[in-house]
Amino acid sequence: MEFSILGPVLVRSGGQDHAPSGAKQKTILAGLLMANEKLVSDEKLSTWLWGPRPPVTHSAQIYTHVSRLRKHVGADAEIVRQSSGYLLRLGSARFDHREFRRMAAQADRELRAGDHRRAAARLRAALQLWRGPALADTTDVLRDVHGPQLEEERISALEARIDADLAMADHRALVSELAGLVMMYPLRERLRAQFMIALCLGDRQGEALGVFWEGRRILAEELGIDPGPTLCRVHEAVLAGDREFPRMAREIMAGAALAS
Image (cartoon, rainbow, N blue to C red; front, side, top):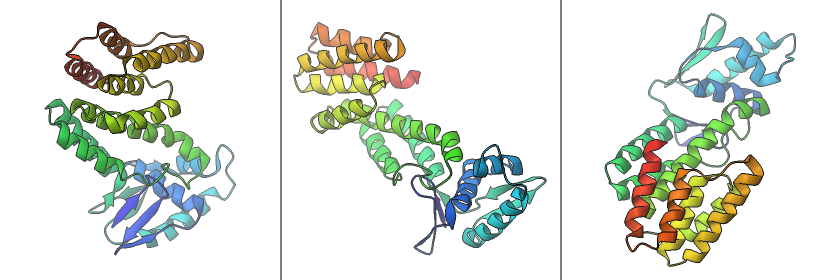
């Protein structure tokens, strides 16, 4: 049995996908999964489902939704009532977010050990677990609580995968990918530094400097801050025109990864 929240909320059993009925059941299931087998109170479930003004019958409605969810959970996992809340015991069931975290942690160890090829492959596999925006069909309240954390984990894994590719001097395909990512996430300095490195590896130093100055302007206008140390170190390396730029770039991005 498999549970998925990295996209629409699904339960897979026997090779078939089963979507719980309606946003409220999906919200309860996703919230229990995100709790990592810890108790979730009725009060918290109520807030996720209805916001600050739940109906008078909220406890009974939660009980009904959970009863219906139990039909989807199957024999490999269990929804348990304890005190004034519920917890989901996963047992032998697979959970895509837990699997994503396990793979990302292993890739981080491989990156630190200098095994860039294996780390890149593992991170690609981890990122393929995402089938769209996480918690896509749950309530706005639950997405507001957990969505930013999940998106940060996804982008951090993507940045780590790009670091691994850059360490192998695999820059050609990265230039177009990073151009789109920097446009989508203009305030993420690590992506911007990676874009500069990819451009320089293709002998496009002038464009790399333009990427830096654009980032400097955006950071000042949006946040009132100067670029951080990683972006500044890449800028200095570009200006120096050092023949050892690929090695310097690997060291800079490795230092940024260790600090994160």
